Length: 263
Image (cartoon, rainbow, N blue to C red; front, side):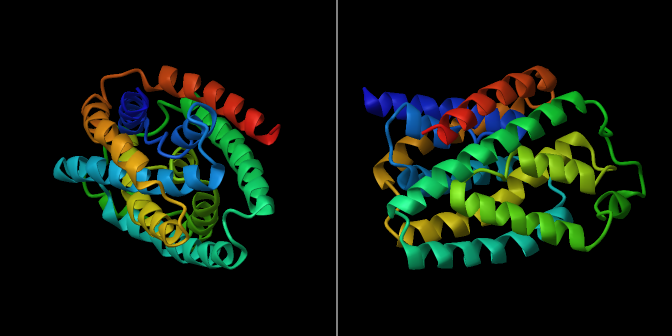
């Protein structure tokens, strides 16, 4: 019965990720902790690789459609991956299963979820503000940030959050992209968010795996559901009322974040 539940959870989260770019960590990690009783360090480590492979499937589909702005992906990765490696080095020296580290993880995860909830709500309110298409000849301008240092700084912050909690590459990443690249159309913002999360979560997940923080059987079951789920979600991305989905997500994330802080 648990096997079916894991597959179903992966499928639902995969659909949400494909539709909105949110959910890899912000939904799956709380689900693993609250509904399946998984230890926080195992939930974070497993979810990082879950997000990496799930978003890899979405990236392939979106890249084939020409939606991924690789220049933007490179900008954010330049800040997030070094920060993730530094955070993993600290975790490895302390020990992820340490009681104090577990407490830091749950508290940071709760705060990250509240921040994600706020970012998701902001994104829902600003839903129609982003352009739908890049004006001909403005491709380079649309993929140039307001300042060259901002993607590095925000990328580093997200890299630390993702390595500690598996949360941050979704709604927070989308909101950051909207602020840094205002001329970038919404479908390409979501595509960039999903694509840059792949190397980040892969690096962070591999680091957690070396510390024994990954449940491989659980990961395989989650992926069995999420890979078809993200394909389906990304297929219907432009046909579903995104504002409604994001508003509902923000409430759910705020609830999960508050509950984690109260543990």
